[in-house]
Length: 520
Image (tube, rainbow, N blue to C red; front, top):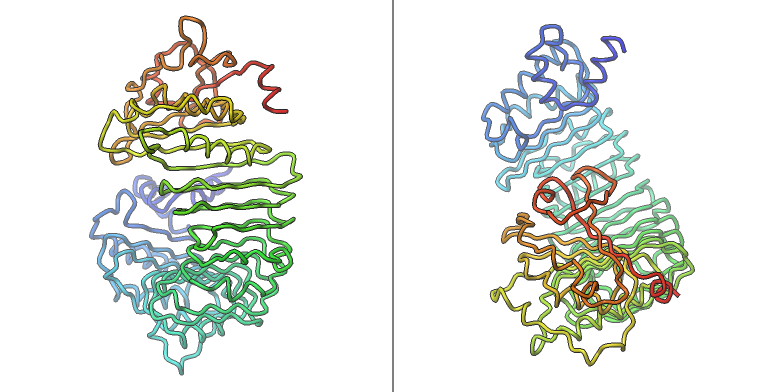
């Protein structure tokens, strides 16, 4: 590799902070960083946190670019801690656009007190292809001003102050726009996207649930993300989206009839996400195109879902609020697909009897038994630290439900007592996991010392059985490095030393005869 190629490789694959350090310490590469086409800086990164000279650094850097007649394709600034230097940005933004051929402009101000008035020249740039603005005031644009963003393809507006009239003016001045994202835009009450737009990707999250979103005749639309816009789907459920591939609905009203004739309106939809949507008590979903389905709920009442997706590849259900376990039945012809269930629970029921919860979980797993299941359970921290020691599983339920084969069982908790034999025995009553991972977390989410956990709980008793289970043949320990991908089997039971540098899981080997019985 020649010196020139080495310099170019270094410029492309490293941050401007590192390039600046090398340039400062090397005579031969002193002005190396001037050749970088992208300027990206965040005062949240190490070296700039609470550094009051960050604006001075930006000013001097851009001046050197200008003095050397260098072009700049991307200018990105993320400000978390500093006060806004509006004068400096008003000075340099016109220069970047008019003199340096800027293609991508990203201005993000994360302090709520900052609102930057955007210069008019931004809206009249022939070179800009991408524009990302956070906490900027776009109402400085007047109704008589021209908007000529003829080459703009991506527009992202986050926490900006913009009126309906100005938004319509801007969007009409972007004939080539393909990606539009609007997050919590102040003063915006109506969003109309008509057929003359070439938008392929649209995302919107609102402050005001009454804001009207109209999507009409956009035939090439491929991805839609809508959050906190009450009746949007009800207003559009009879609208044709012939090329839509991904639909993400968050905090919307979705009554039972939402999915009537769903596949006819979304014939190409391959990914559907339903996140914290209201009204889904019982529904039927049929779609031959959906391959990935995610449902995130906080149900107060039991949800019943009948899902017919012949070509499903991945399904996920999560509940982060100790909700009532759902009833989900799948119909599919897919031979290889994965499912993931993520639940938070206190496991607290009348008389400390957790049996009903385990039995409902068994029914849920049974509905997914055609898939490779990952079951992740997070156990709540409660005031009585030894309550799980008192928990019991009612033996009278034994034999009513067959255990379901589970690929991964992942348990998270804040105290080692969460992993006592009673809890693990409860899971062994309803499922047969191939792998178990257990993570301990402290009060504020920090990982605890795994030495608290007694490995002897996963060792055989004096009869040679594990947990008294005749069909559990062996339990072995596997580890991998924090950044590694491959798991390796290790001997011995000394885990504390391994825990600091490795991830740990337990491989459970079940007797072949029972495994065949469960899989049949």
